[in-house]
Amino acid sequence: MPRTFIAEVSNPNEAFARLQRWADENGYYINGDQTSGRFQGTPAGLAGFVIGEISGAYSVNGNLVTIQVNKDLPSGPVANALSKHGLSLVRAR
Image (cartoon, rainbow, N blue to C red; front, top):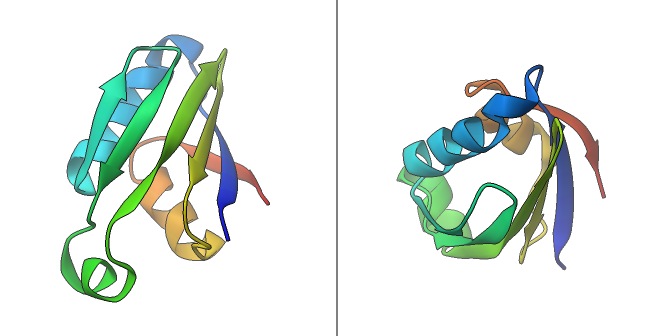
């Protein structure tokens, strides 16, 4: 089941840069620009072995970043991965 995560950054001018750092450090390739695009990749370590490749889409609107993934990922680990790059998870559905 696909899942959507909405994250927030304190400075809207840094939203895409923070998203890009998150993607780079978690094994995802981004194809898009500062407002929207797609991503795919396999996370490193045990997560990659268990979950496999993840793909999805993102959009940036002001200080909110919406990330849609093709798998039912648990919100706790996603929130932890995002927070390391200044993105605070505000909603998961």
